[in-house]
Every structure is written in C-alpha cells, then in structure tokens.
Image (cartoon, rainbow, N blue to C red; front, side):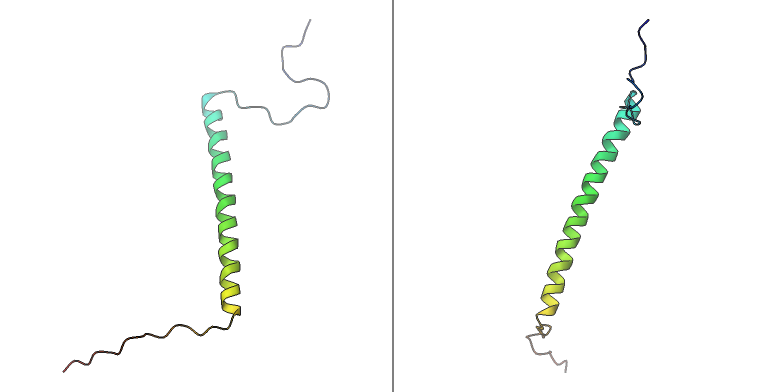
Length: 72
C-alpha cells in the first residue's frame, strides 16, 4: 500500500506548508512583517551612518539667522 502522508524518506523537511486558511494567512503576515522589519533596519542603518558621517565632519550647528525682536 502506498503511504498517505506526503513526507518521503528519513530526511524530510521539518516545517510543512500551511494547510488551513488561517495558517496561510499567518505565514503571509509573518513574511510581510519580516520583510518590512528588514527594510526598516536597512533604512535605520543608512540614516545612522549618514548622521555619524555628518557629525564627524566637524560642522558647527547652524545658528539662528534672524535678530530677536524686542517687545517694548
């Protein structure tokens, strides 16, 4: 008799594909969240590198250009 389960042999994948609609949705959400987290981490790293490069340039902070108005 042929086996009814879809695993073949001793060396099989541990994680099986989601079967129910809820499991498919959960898998899709997990993939989307991981992808977005990686893109946020990349953006954070690039902004941090730009900020460090800007601060290492030794530029003084910009001073206000206008005179303060006196109230009389």
